Image 1 (cartoon, rainbow, N blue to C red):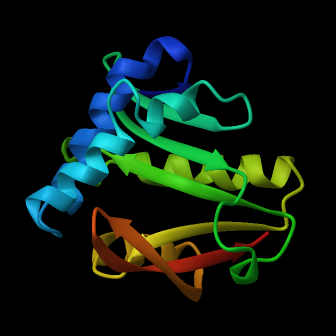
Image 2: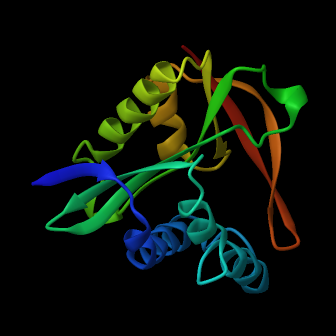
Length: 171
């Protein structure tokens, strides 16, 4: 049975390993190895942004666990997107990752409902996210939930720059 709960600092090592694994499975083919390594070394590991953000009380993580193993998570943050791309008063879904072993089991949908519900409870007027233009599965998922493409964001993976779509859900 899949359970859902807020993350706590003790979840850090397992959450970091899970996030890195999903990121590499999803995006590891998308750039030269040196660029992938440059991104991964900044995002994950003892000095990575995931663990730093987990310690930040203004950032919320919601976990999906199966048999006490982390199989998915959503991360809500104050928007870090360029101010000209978004309107004031929104929140940003910075990450929504689900282990490939749990695709198609409703995990992403439940995490998304948490993100939307939390944004509404915090009186946000919109929920923003970015998605890589070549991630067709994620784009379909967001489209089905009413997110609309409102702009583009240059996502840096090492020296490589990819096009991410900025998407918005009005709340």
